[in-house]
Length: 312
Image (tube, rainbow, N blue to C red; front, side, top):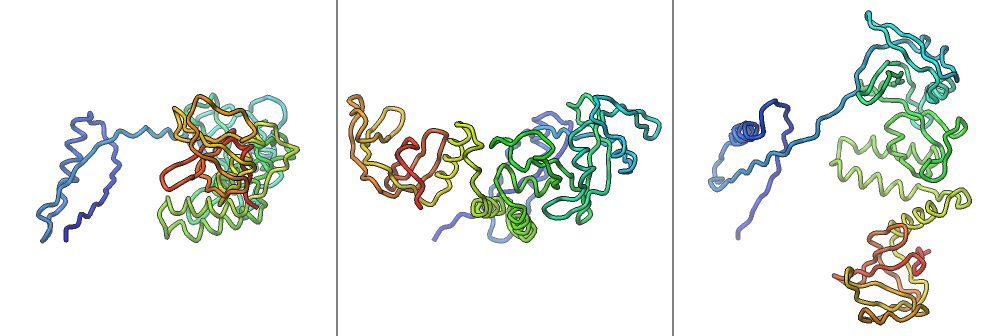
């Protein structure tokens, strides 16, 4: 029996060398992989990909919380701060400061914000203060979370803000989760982050989030937002059910698409079959308007959302 074993080695390195010399550099170092007994046919191919430069924010200095929070204001004004001889004018009316004044602890995991740094991103016009907590020897950024996600109609107002650490905020995303749900996601993350691959952890988080997520109140959603929510629900459902009898046609740009039997017959494209009302299909991908479902082993059908409903 013949077998082939394939291994992937990734190595990120910084250098000022031009591409051809960087390629030689990579070949030289990765090419020194030692041959072992029985590995005479070992072949090593080195491909060099240029990575985007990381743009890091600049940390200008650390200040105590008492040097910052008491001086926040709703006025569009700046206050001067000096650190190691350098002076910086900082706007003191950020919404985040007011949220931190009210609560400096992550409402989900309970991590307290304890350190205040003056920082500036290369794209920023002026520096700003960021609050950090410390966990396992690492700094964790404290963020202003929208309780009701902006993507689903949430407003930029104080009553819709809460303090949340960056880890919990990223886990929550735009989902409608209770704080208990975010805590459960965080527990899943903490228990698995050093045990499984990033891809497997991402899938585990997504699967848990779908189970914990609650639907946004439809009354607060615009038409576009309701369609997006409906599309997401159908795309993540185990199955969808046809809402009516559907005629199937073979189109030009897509293999198969469906139309209600009550719609006008399509004389342009070839009729290839039909699906009865109540047929269960496996959803694959969904957009705002349509959902793509598995039809046969190698075929898919594209249906308008009005033609299917999530299986109860």
